[in-house]
Length: 265
Length: 265
Image (cartoon, rainbow over all chains, first blue to last red; front, side, top):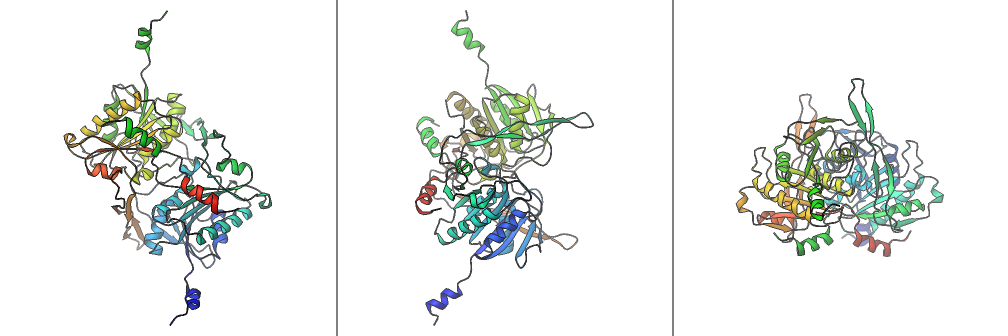
């Protein structure tokens, strides 16, 4: 007979799938492995090249490959030729052969607050996990530099992952976590927020190639149209870590009810 | 002095931007131009190659090009080397130099109901337009065939676009419209719906290349986990055109309120 105590000791550690969109060699994913390594059994499946701005893209027209990666000491890791979303799908179906207990994505080099959640490969990997009934968190640091200081991001990634693992949340839970840039001692704490209505105003840069043909580079200026103090952008501007719970049901219920009353078939 | 009547006559027709994700040569976009051509001034900006499953991807790492396309009789059209979302951004900034009155995307060859809205390039173009304060509609026909019968889809695309143009809806309005396959006379009408929780269960097909290395093809079986009769999947199964109002604020407000009470920084 197994005593309750023995049963507890034998409990398997949670399986933690880690991915990102900056590619498996980015410092950010190394920081996320560092943050989570004491919290469970880590398996890394991440893109073999940068996949920023890939949104929820999946690979349909050509096949995918998985190649072992030995860059994380003692941790099973695979580089994948596809998008962040492909990584999550392949990890579940071909590497883990089960659903992990949690999926962590990041730590992204650069902000994924406000409308960025829609373009972000980091967040799309997290959303994909939640669609597959795996609670997930995407982490992003507001610092694009390859030499960014991840100390604060690591501390909060560990804290929030531990909180998520011990809280009984819905299996479709997704958190979008952004961490302010700079000295971790200046971070004032965490704030649960809503997604700000803030976006980039596009202004394509126009150039001419040596053959006289025009081409365009996407550029843009970030503009916050949202005056609310309950948004992720507000929290980050005031040096809080922002946490936005995200969902994949895109239905606009308010408009649905309105149209049901006014539009007849 | 201009009389009221003259002023009315002189009113500019609405500018209608048309894009898709199957590429500018797909029969579906030709059907959408056909459906909308009497409703305003059409400008087509669409990808130069198929971009299905690209989700909300944008092109960051390399430049974009716009090439005139002469395949639509008397209609200004451009093929773009980028994603559907790039097409919308470039159309506004470099072709129209203004916001169109409406953006139409499609008609997609294949369903974009339920969770497909997230992977779909067709719907991501519509979402991008709405982010930029352009009301938009994505249209999809539940028939993947290149020789699909678009008659019903054309009829409903015209009807719903006309309805949208005459209804004063919010500038961020997005509609996800799916049209049943087959004889248009069997369509029972339109239903305003919510997005079903229905998804593909992945099952990657594993193969070995001539060098002995494994590769994977994404495949999957569609499963509807949602028993509701108010969903897009239900409506389509019962031969209605489904209309789901969509939003780009992904905040899960219910969970936000819960976490605000229980998670302390």
